[in-house]
Length: 372
Ligand code: THG
Image 1 (spheres, rainbow, N blue to C red):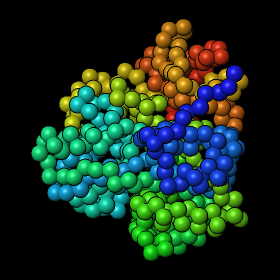
Image 2: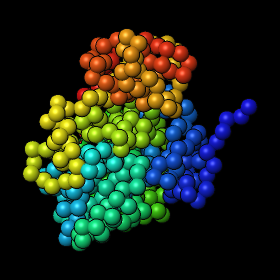
Image 3: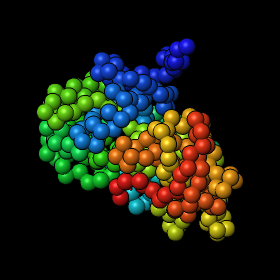
């Protein structure tokens, strides 16, 4: 028997870096925003140790931008998120839930304010441009909503400042967390933010010029030999440890931001108008959510990938589902992100996890597993 593969075609769009990462030994891909996203290079565990010790360059251009520009741009972006966008200054980024009229999670992008009247919404995996265009058209807003074909490459790991400063200059060291600067490389100005989908620190460089971006990619590898710079990608183990949520895996349109423990990005106290405010206020006023994303540590051999949700049981009764799982080498246990019902969500609650290769004993934990 052979392993099935995902077939690549025009619909599974390649990126300006696809041929480079193929030459650099990419081991697998998934599809994200209709675009290729690498899933591992040497292997999940080898990639994990390398990311935590050295520095990696990632092709995450599938985190495509939706641009919203024009006199009503701020109004439209605000309608899409419960986070107070009036507090987002030009030059800053914000992690922000996007919700529908029921409070359901449409996406959880990073929003960059390029100017008072111009935003990039840096997407997780759902078709937000269509939602935004529909709103602008339906509400008669004076805002253009389009996909400019811009996505980031990421430089992540403890040596990220050292590597990027060699290529873009020491200015990168002054960029604050979730701030961005516009820095030239070979004459082209690039948006460079201190952000990224790991807890190891680093930057994202938004590629709006393929040849310039490819030259930058090559310069990073040319400069990084003694730093052990290598190709990488978002790492399943590291992102579970750090509790970085994956839309479509850990939450869907069926979940609200309170269930996703994203309360700190929901500004109901601000008098801002957004779609879903009534729904979120109702949930808040009726005692909050009935389930919440928690960590679970569980016993046994290294967990297989969680491809379909695994039931979580408390005293034999259904109490939620595991949505992402991995063996953590540094914590020496299996770890998971799980949507856990109120009956089991107190940290320390003993649960069992029905993984495909058997039922394991586990315990509910707070998040993240490591770090902050
Ligand atoms: N970078 C960019 N775009 C993206 C992602 C990214 N789009 C898709 C996806 N990732 C969006 N999801 C997240 C999830 C978490 C974070 C960023 C994007 C993140 N969270 C910080 C944390 O949890 O520690 C907190 C952020 C804050 O405090 O404001 O960084 O990675 N361009």
